[in-house]
Amino acid sequence: FSMPPMTVEEALEQLQLVDHDFYMFKNIATGEINVIYIRNHGGYGVIQPHYGKGEQNGHTPS
Image 1 (tube, rainbow, N blue to C red):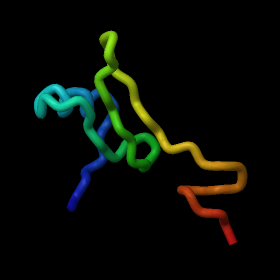
Image 2: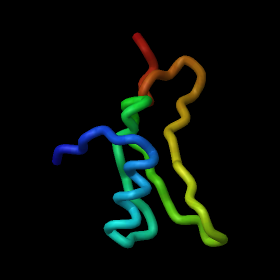
Image 3: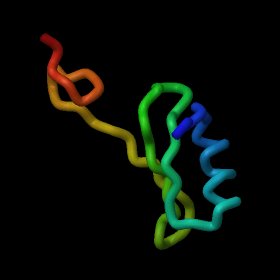
Image 4: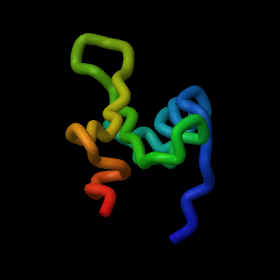
């Protein structure tokens, strides 16, 4: 399915609109898939991919 890129702020708005605990989105700043979620004690967090040394987008360059 199509996942249009958006800012973290736009993703937070979408999270609030769908009234879920988390929302997956394509971060416009990085081009990566991120997850924004509601924290148990208030506020929100963003999960971003972290690649090991020498990896790009989860793949080791040839």
